[in-house]
Image (tube, rainbow, N blue to C red):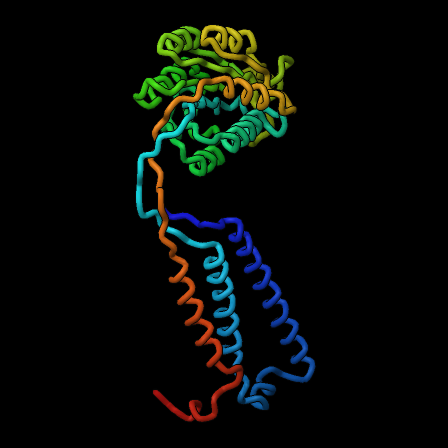
Length: 336
């Protein structure tokens, strides 16, 4: 496993395009100033020792050197030893609705984006717990198997969009059934499902699926997202319309969401533009009994900063010996 010991320093790489922009601006300004004195071809004959190509080359060497310096500071490391570690935690499977109705903006910025924000902050609050992710619309798919790798969880979470599930609908029952099968075989750790949906176009026996989950010791918590009044669904051409040309409104099916939570022995909370849903969900998870969960982690890492450090040293030596002007002795050598 590869990682950076201090990844926050990688933000310094954003300075590279800024430096490149300043350099381009400086060179253009310099050329504009020279043109005031006459034609460039004539000026080149008057300054035979000036080597612009070397000037550009030196700049690219320095720019690359700065990038390597940032990598050295960030501390690249490779995991050298994989061990199974036992910690006290719970297992959480998230079922996230990605149907087109989740693009509605009755919750800012959209229902789907709000759900992703809640889950991202939830992952930030996890310590020794495991988390998995399922996306669903007309079908349900595992996006992330149950894991304690929170970095991967946030990475997969950020990439979620409705196009991931081509079949439209809201197969909540299928998502719950898949989540039940996706927990680790261990029966020790307490397990729970977090379902985030607007309940639009509900298709299958979701209540029955929640009841089956409870029989296996798994609770189902539901975050209903959306308004009860209804909201249009944005598309690339405006808003979604039915076959008669009327605008389609999507409403939160709160009754169905509450029934699933009751059947799943979990909590229900409506998600709005506040952080109340996140607080309620975090409080519910904190109630769970922390049991022993196993995770495979890298227990030791080898420092790999020497590779970019040596490359940086080499570039600095090369840059030192490259002169801004042409070398009179070398210019007399004709290789071809």
